[in-house]
Amino acid sequence: MKRNIIFGVALLLSLSLILGACAPKPASEPVGEVAIDADEFDDEGDEDEGEAGPVTLRIAVLPIIDTIPLFVARDEGLFEEFGLDVEFIPVSSAPELSQMVASGQADGMVTDGLTVAFFDKEEIQIQIVRYGQTPSANTGHFFILAANGSGISTPEQLKGVEIGISEGTIIEYITDRLLQKQGFLANEIKTIAVPKIPDRMALLASGELQAAVLPDPLASLAVQQGATIILDDSQTPEYGASVYVFTTEMINEQPEAIGSFVEAIDIAVRFLAEDPDEYIPVLTDNKLIPPPLIENYTIPPFPTGIYSEAEWQDTLAWAQQKGLLLVDIPYAEAVNTSFLP
Image (cartoon, rainbow, N blue to C red):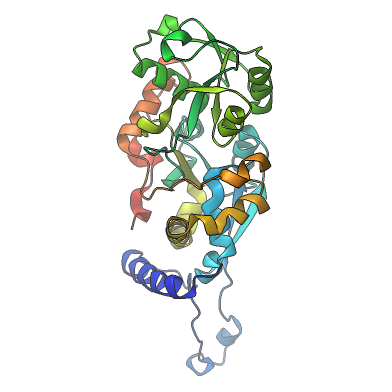
């Protein structure tokens, strides 16, 4: 799946942007290969230092559709071309994802703005550097679903109905915001905590839950099994974004490497936009979607850019209103826009 010609042009443009925008540079070369002339060094042993090796970035990775650009960048050799050694650390749940970063076992992850706010409530530990995934006009990211046989087919019928969610997470945030957009008052929104997605899916499928909130593509699987979509965030992209984040320690120590990482993801996103069907095997090889969906699945579009200040402020306002956050966190401290093209 190499895109040598396209990549060559994109890489030259990317390198020119990076070299022009990032200063001062450390002694090591972050991208490309530079020939070293031993005659330029004296006889005191400087020539033995040689070139610095690639910068290692450790990324905690959930098996979700949001992460497909990571796998494309790896498989197309983009990280290597930028002088990066990107290690993927597989995790199976959102709490484990955060724990890997909090414990220092990972340098970055794909998460959401609310998680960033919780990390940074006492001190800035992580920063957003890029969008991961956002809803689009034709592709939702999170869905409020009704169980087969529940008789629920309209948002109005959700008033007073317990909706399965995970509390204090983006799932609860999306649920509140989507229903509030429909005119729901706070006392008309009823939820019940079902933290694990497999449990939520099973209870919805059995009818023990009349409604639940799921991310795609698991929402698509639930629909295939009989659930009905009541609401989704396709018309409200300001609520459902995921984001790439890195620790402030890594950003401060290796800013050029982070910039190169963001450029590699940008190129991977362009590859996906040009021919999404070519990368269906990436989904299957890395188990990013359930096997029953593969035959008819279309890879959604992926965004460029970065989490906006309006998105950040709304996330904080929701968390504060819920009593989950007691402080204000400045946008400029939690979102690092210096890596934008």
